[in-house]
Image (cartoon, rainbow, N blue to C red; front, top):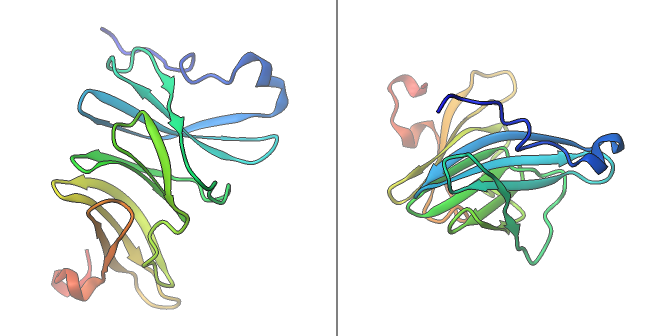
Length: 173
């Protein structure tokens, strides 16, 4: 079938349109016949993360269930999404959300990549055969940026690899 706009699938409910509620989809991933879209809702009160799932190739979407013992900082919204053999991971500044199937999500911790050092910026996330890989850069004040990568088997515990550990020619990507 031809591509179609998804604005109706991701529309703000009619009762909230005049209340200043805004929704945005920032990432989409697929695994095992499931699509998941990472969205945020902001406006009247506190911003929140939302996860939308589809098991029919994106023809219909439903809001995933969020289960978490503690609510992470509302300002720490995930922006990156990946899915693979280790499950699903949504990552952002100060937050990591995990899911086994994409249908139910939990805030794994409130620190996200706890191994960030001053100047680190996460730019990308992907799933690997053994977990997850995040890539980015370290931008120290007044110096050129250098590549940084983080690896994790579960999306919660991370190991930081700086440019010397990455063994890139010249230390740059």
